[in-house]
Image 1 (cartoon, helix red, strand yellow):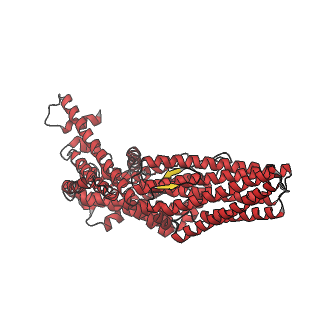
Image 2 (cartoon, one colour):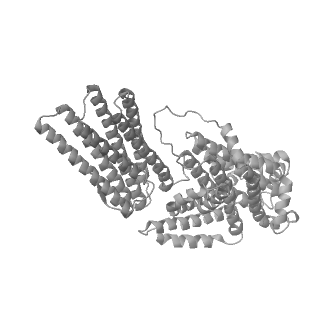
Image 3 (cartoon, one colour):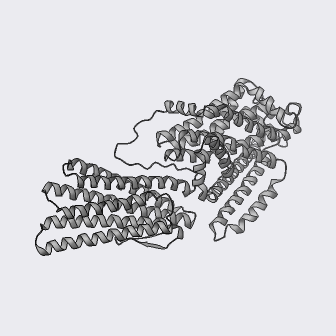
Length: 601
């Protein structure tokens, strides 16, 4: 009721009995503010997504840069956050990388420290452009350039249009937000009410921090919370201490995004999220303890003396002061934590202990989704890493089979059961990863992404077929030794050489799965295939000769033919994988699988 009294008293042009008119005006102002905030948020999202898509091809290089050392990780975090205009997107990206095993916790903490500094760029942009000039003209110019680019056939041009359109909508939202705030300079009751928030007491500062945290959690964007704070300060609603405390709160509230993204993920991903939360909370507590010395220091390095200003002069200068406060707070916080990153990582590991997350032998592809990541390249890094694990599993299975073939005294039952578990694990990998790739294909922004995703689906299918053949070979060995079938020495030696050649080919392809095969490497793969086919023809002919002469056991010879067939298929699968990696970059319209299937790239 007290707040309603102050709002009603603002409308001095209306009779005090005209409550309906006053209520309608209040509702309109509320929707203008909320609508302006929504426009600002949409602009940030559009800008962030456009920048992510534009920089998508460079994500792998950025990831390699992140993992060099702590200082480079911090610098990378700053640059990425400035580029994509969202600390939330950066931290969610980091949590997803950690979750996929592409980044260690120490490097993740460094990137998070840098993201906190990088997010201050938005505050500076708002402070320097939002209130110093008519940004409506700037917004409309940006949208005008974006309009024709949106209809371009080139994906890169459309991505650039999203960036320009995001900037324009962001500035429009900020302009509307600034003009939606009612002028309360002549309203004694409203100023009296707001003065309670500017009373500069410990409890009131704590309340402002809590409000800043809640607002940021609700809008899911510290940049939006920062823009709201600067706008209210510019319009005379907030003083120095209240606005600074709200900024501290927004730094705490922004951690909720990474925490939500870590739910249901790996232990390491949860550790990265908690590292972000504790870092920002502890930093805000330290800043509150040294609140007034920190404000004095910021005042000293900011042009003009904020404490000697009042009225319009104070409101005009305050956004710049708050942007400086935001930057100084995060820089000091990072400098204090930087020497102890490794110790901090060890503390987080003790705080969030590792635990068994899934049943042994069951595959779960853990990925992180969210409104802040809309670029398949980020997920494709994790998928490629999982495919490499799948290739390692296939190589291990073939090695185990060869051990079974060469060791008749081995316990076949245990080996076959182990091979069966591996084959089922590979099936789960192929199913889950392929399903996710199909999901990404439905939202693919560029033909390059679609081609790459189809290539990855193709490779997973081939690797799963390799594991099937390895398991079938193990079953054949089990049957051979259970039936005590004996190969003659020449056949035994030829089969061993044949299996070694196939193993070498599979290892050759596995070792080159993280890059595009060159023409020379593809030629080497073709030579492997020719040698395998030559062995197949030679061994098959020997079997036919023995059968025609009637000097061999038919069941034994048929088993040998089955082994030859599965080994030859593994060679074909390896050739298909090599072709996929060699031809995908050329956007080859069709790769024909030798087993009869065809997949469009």
